[in-house]
Length: 155
Image (cartoon, rainbow, N blue to C red; front, side):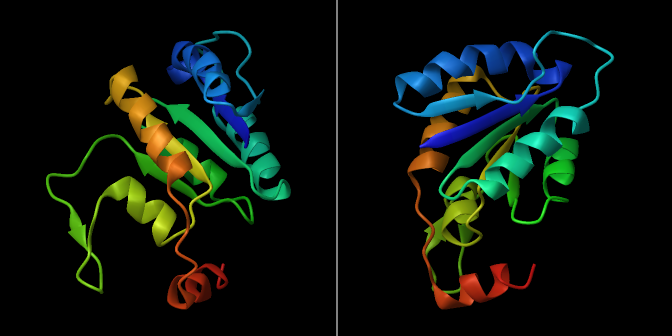
């Protein structure tokens, strides 16, 4: 799978660590920046081009990283065709969907929302947690349920 990855200074070291991990899983990884550590850089300068590439490349996904992942997801979600979901830790309980199925946060973002970008809060997670959640995100398919597709088609 083609993966695009981006961060600002808040996740620079983590991004650099994740690139070989992702290629080791067999993915083609394109780095959208930051390309050096600069504590004064601005996440939209890297996140927006990453989201644009994901939206323009069918079947691709993105990994974006920030301190909380919130601002990064906001920037990515301004791009038509980008669907970024924020993850900075497991909620205290799993949700139950409308069919009564218990589903966790990562599975929900893929199964119900067809999220194509995972926005990670580097200040809230260990690298081990992040690696596991990325693997889950990339492995979880969209359900293609008509109800979910209908909702996605509205934006």
